[in-house]
Amino acid sequence: MAALLEQLLSLATAGTMIISSSLFAAAPHNDVNGLLFLQNRQWRVSRYYEPDTIKAQVPGQLQDMRADAAAALEEMFAACKEDAGVTLKAVSGYRSYQRQATIYSNKVDSTGSKKKADEYVARPGASEHQLGLAMDVGQKSKENLSASFGRTKGGKWVAEHCWEYGFILRYQEGWEDVTGYKFEPWHVRYVGKENARLIHEANIPLETYLLMLRQETLIDIVLGQEENAE
Ligand SMILES: [Zn+2]
Image (cartoon, rainbow, N blue to C red; front, side, top):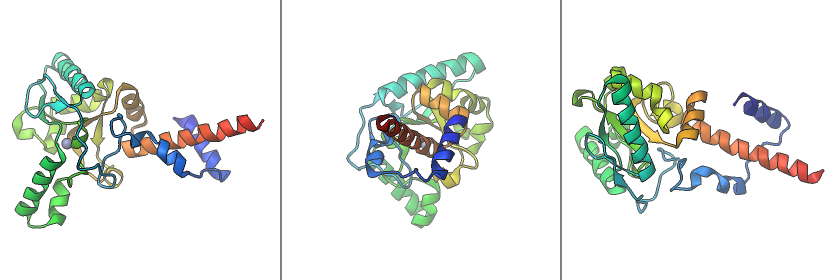
């Protein structure tokens, strides 16, 4: 990662860092069925997008996820039980656009304004849960979807080990300006083991990681052109 940053900086000073539209089209997060699709308050997914999901065989409720994410979740929950003696629970996995629309409008009703609702709930199309790659993980119900989950044995284990199973802790403290969401120690997102390891080692939000991948692609293009020119 350090070498990559060095390369980026030298390219930037040389004035060669121009992101072209064709490069944008090649960005991995443009594949909605891929593992790196970016879904946040800015980048929303269509109301018509529905992934194929299965029910992860874990305790809890709303266990639906995409098959690869469900298998990884089962592996992670089993490892937590074995390592830490804690039974993790699924709280909320896949949610359709329509389901998110209902949750959002209920929140608007209960808080009295969209501005207030936006603090707590993603608008339809802006929730990662629609991808089938996110899971809200819980332990005991009183800590579910609460910052206190991060202080439990299970919450700490998840923060430390989820990357080993291909998950990232998506919304960490201090990242709100980048991710658009407050600290959520319960929300994990599946990105595959290799990406999760790199993101964990660099300790960066998914948004930053995707930007780096795009820049890396740019470097490959620039270096490739130099090679061709010789
Ligand atoms: Zn969540």
